[in-house]
Image (cartoon, rainbow, N blue to C red):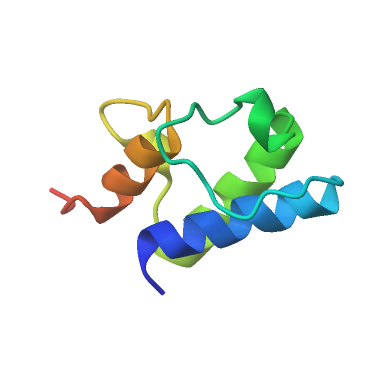
Amino acid sequence: MEVRARIESLVLTVNRRNGGQLIRLDFSLRLLDPTFGLDSLDLAEIMVEIERHFGNSPFDALRTPRTWGELADSLQAPTP
């Protein structure tokens, strides 16, 4: 599954579980933007699943991602 599609699926699943009704992920928004209805534990759950799926932690990068787009880009970047 494509990186952005996988991230979107994870975020929307948690959003809906929390009572949200989002149908698309705006990758320009910050990870904990109130639009998503996520708290820090939800974000941790998503990051663990991303690490499990892609094999590396997005927070191991030189620059910590602040938006969903930066997160997706960090996962698509070639590893040194």
